[in-house]
Image (cartoon, rainbow, N blue to C red; front, side, top):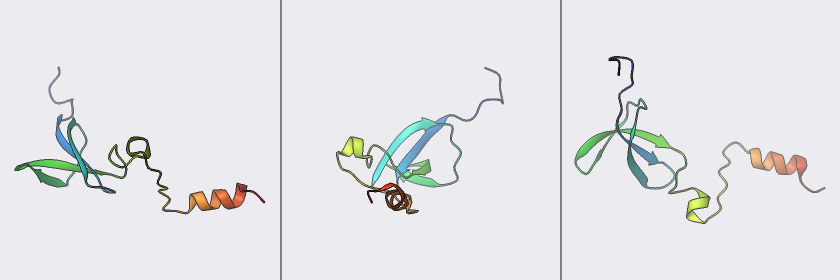
Length: 80
């Protein structure tokens, strides 16, 4: 491999902000946030949805509509 052209590949914590789910995995993502897990400091990347909160994996249905898109769609194309 050529030196200096590849991004840094390191352990990163991905944290789901909608529930208390964290996973440590390897990534090249750049982030300034840090978190301490089991006494070791890792870079932190926050995500909105993960396997800890996704309806397919949890078996629950949730509507994440922060901008009213679902209501506008139902109003426009719903039964009249």
